[in-house]
Amino acid sequence: MNQETLKDIFQRNVSLMKACGVTYEQWQHEPILDFDTDLRVGERLGWTAMPTKSLFLRFKSGDFALLLTHKNARLDAKRVKALMGQRPSIASDNEMMAAIGCVPGAVCPFGLPESIHVILDESLLTFESLMYTPGLPEFTFAFPAANLMALLDALPNRILRLPVVESH
Image 1 (cartoon, helix red, strand yellow):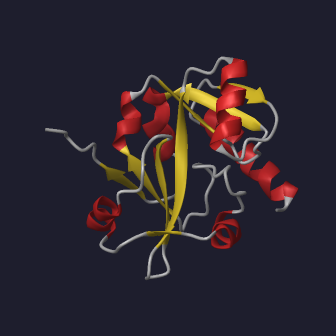
Image 2: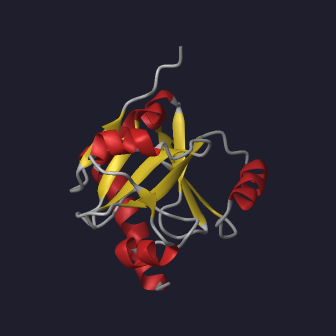
């Protein structure tokens, strides 16, 4: 993966935070490309924010979307199909890298090409703060979840909201 592309994604994230007036915390650490490393680094640094998960999806139409959810969530293909009108599948690492420039395990939800739809799992709005990787896997950003909609609204991407499922 092109290091310059990752640095550009990182800079777009810093610019987005500043443009939206969002205060954020930033940590530099060993590269995080899997959940085990994420847990280890998080414990060592005392992270308390909810880690987000960005699943890069493809559709038969050729469209791509990024599902922004929390680390414990699984892809609910039926709910995404109801929202998008077509069944999603997880894009391959090569498709994802070609489309958005991120490395597997460190997919950034902000600064995507305009053609990529963002599907927001609205359960993220229930947390106090959220964490994500801003392109470079050796960095983590955390910000108040109350600012998530302001960040998403500042993007050129189409934002689709996946409502929280009520459990009975």
